[in-house]
Length: 373
Image (cartoon, rainbow, N blue to C red; front, side):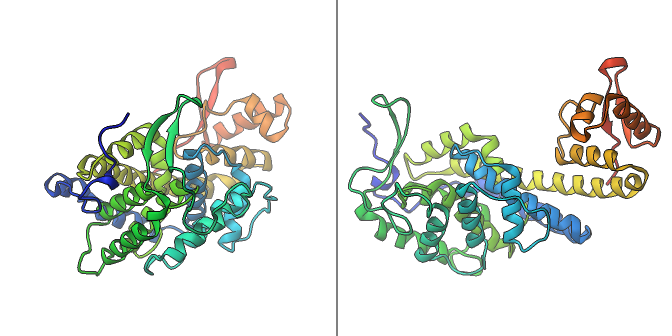
């Protein structure tokens, strides 16, 4: 039986404390990194900028869903995102209502980020995301069920309780306090604070209230994203959920520990590292898009349609590269060319300087020639 009360059961609930001395140095690089990212975005062409923003939204939608155990189809997500952004491109039918829901939620959460956050906003986010769920009693409003709201793991009958949220009857009053704090701590307000600290507290506070019957994790990450966007003045193409997903076990452990008290320095140290990781990864993706644009500008006119298709597939793998490199077998699978044609096409790309061969004989594979930024 748990003896120590949860954070919301303690007298200092809502009055979170943390070490400014420890955190000030850690959060200091944020605005410099954001300035670098924003400057890079200004310097790239509109098509590349569009690609980055679409990819970031896609990654955010997929990652925030993966954290909750949901796997979404990449091409359906991408098609849905492009529709939300009013962009042309291939139309892929979206059959998964989870994709429709998470993108509707993100679209609402990213609209007019400078405006205050209201209970009506959060409820509309949840309703947009989960309107297809016929098994939920409360969609579009705070939870009302009398049974405890618990975060559990393990087999039925032997579950481990990671956290128990406040009773449903207390949620409206607790959310009113939270929203007042969130809006009073916004940029330009007297209680304004560093955006990472504010986003970290906001996410923890929201998750500790757990105001909805379902969807709290995804909406809580969108709340943190709004806090960061309000400081930046816009939603920049970096994915908080992608960084969290890459450190999911750490994330849940840090969140669980933070929900046991109201001294939250360790939580904010972790959250800061996640935000800075997300921005660093975004900068890497921008560098990658710049290299891609230079590469295609040089080599695309020299390629046939098969070669273009294969090279674009290699670029689709992103900054980490096409896993295992390209070879004749993969080339055949992508282009439907014969093995002999695949071998000729690949050697032709090597001769033109577009690919670099690694290894020899049957084990040879090919990597994209790296273009400097």
